[in-house]
Image 1 (cartoon, rainbow, N blue to C red):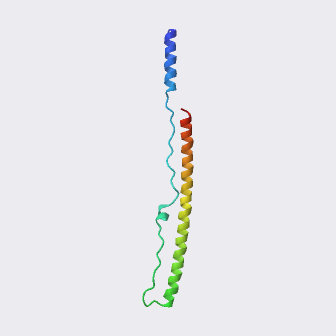
Image 2 (image 1 turned 45 degrees about the vertical axis):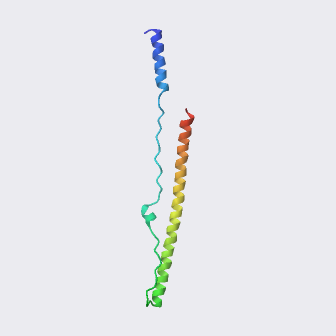
Image 3 (image 1 turned 120 degrees about the horizontal axis):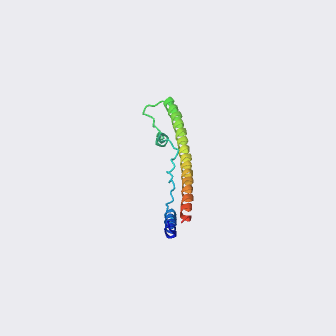
Amino acid sequence: MNTTTRLLLVAITAALTGCQTTRFQVMEADQCPVPPAQVAAQCVPPRTLADGATYDDLVALAIEDAENLKRCAEQTNFLSKSIALCNASIDQHNARIREINAKTTGSR
């Protein structure tokens, strides 16, 4: 093998190694940790008294409505906290993507 052939081989090897594509793993989007059944839960609408209702019926309905309002408030608080968790998860995911983009853009 003469010197010209060796130099040509070294040049081709260097050129091929320099043209390698950098690969990185794209991250999947984070899932929000909210059970679908909880999101689908609905507040119970208030009921009305039927004609001829007694005072006992009124008291029972008031107790039932108070319980339903309490459950509805708990559901609203749960959804509010879940949205905050999802937003935080999305922010973290986007920060990781920005880091990857900065590394891949900066290396060019």
